[in-house]
Amino acid sequence: AVAAPTPSAAAAAAATASIAPAGGVSAPSIGVPDVGATPVASVPAAAVAGTAPMTACHASPSSATGSFGSDPLCRLVSALAGSAGRAGASDALAGGLRSEASGDFARIRADAARIAGSQEAGAVLAEDFLTALERSASACKRAAALYAGSGELAISFNGGKDACVVLYLFLACVAAAVPAGGGDSSRESPWAGKTVIFFDSDSEFPMVRDFVAWVVQRLGLRMLSVASKNFKRGMEELVSSGMRAVVMGQRRGDPWTADVGVFSPSSDGWPPFMRINPIIDWSYSHVWLFLLSFGLPYCSMYDEGYTSIGSITDTLKNPDLLRPDGSYAPAYELRDASSERAGRGAAASTKSKKADSVAEGRSADLQTSSAKSSEVSPCMDSFKSLGDGGGAEEGPKPRTAGVAVIGNELLSGKVRDVNAHYLCGQLHARGVVVKYLEVIPDEIEAIARCVGRMSARCDFVFTSGGLGPTHDDKTMAGVAAAFDEELVEDARFFSMLSSSVGRPRGAGSVASGAPPGGNERTSPEAACHKMACVPRGAHVEWLDDGSPWPIVSMRNVHILAGQPGAFRAMFER
Figure (cartoon, rainbow, N blue to C red):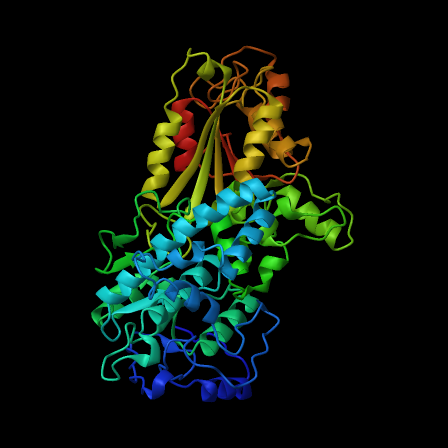
């Protein structure tokens, strides 16, 4: 376990000294369980932020866009508490926002129009957002009531946009539920612990670390920093110390959320705790409408072209936000929400790399070497490291995959596909979520479009079929086109294929002019030349098992044969 870095000692001291309990109520001192996690700052569990003014300097660090002001979350707290004293008000905390006289509602409508791109679409988005806000606020209020004991509940806070929404909303809902003037001073705070969990790793962005530390100190929270490699063990010890629930920023469409609800118990094999997902049904637009309309701070990386932030090793700027001048638009200007994760995963698409080259004043033409024989693709190595059954549902870095099954014979019904069924089962057993499964024709453009889209949105992509020597075997050419590369002949591949000519059928022979899955006779030499061509820059991985068929990987795309037996053998290798 590693404690995340904090701002300067002077700033920390100033922030700590400025936090005062509301109404003169002394906040309880919450002990941090010894679970191999260290609190970032020894900050007293003060009253919920937003109920008392702060007097110290409130300048935001460069890692943050926006600030909390002298009274953090006050606008959001006021909006959520607005319906409390109104006659006939519904139990929905956000009900008062729909009043035409509400300044917040006017801001929401204006921001919704800006995000949606038109007044008409913005009006629909604004109404939909208010409904989602009502439901989420009710869920937060219910969670705070159910897990009100000291140390029973914590919020997972990694500094991302979704985590910010959940943290701010939960704090504001708790504050809005407190009667004016502080209420009964003998009564414990609805969320006594005010604890957040930060799952740390060596590949965390420094800017994210700084932003997290700043938010924690400004809001007077207590943070546990747990090494991500020990996530499950850390949760086991937290639960054994009395933690019963964790509030998370998951949204529908994220990995592992297909069967997740607002309140979902942990999965089998994990310690028993409740996963609380207040914004599980929010859209990408809802997230930005919330942050912008209420003027709440978020990590400034989102203003630099990032739409989904993970680790340094799997996060790029979103190519869909690239401007003609080489700069990037902010995340809230993304029009196609389905491409939110286009910069995530091992994808590192050529489009993104070219965009970075332009932005940095370099030539947009990537200088890529020829095929890299006898090397293991970094993405392949990452996949192999998952191991059988190694995926953990609550893990901080779930993996996603796309499967492209290629062949006109499948679309015509002449052949029944079995590879996709097999592969999806194997991926699921390894904890990998299959997000896309497509059957596409033997057309270079169709293959390139499908593979390029999946590569940008998934950690791993697998193709099946189209590797033979005939005119309709176009997978290699399609994958090359997806990354704007040309086909080059791999010398070792050609040598291995040539040496196999004349072997008995079934021993990896190309005597018939076809690789595993091929079925059309042609010149053996021509077949060898065609099949030895791979995308420039691809990794060609060989194993010492006597097979002349290597695994070819282009970035995060792994190219496998179509014949079921060969497909399974290549995947198992």
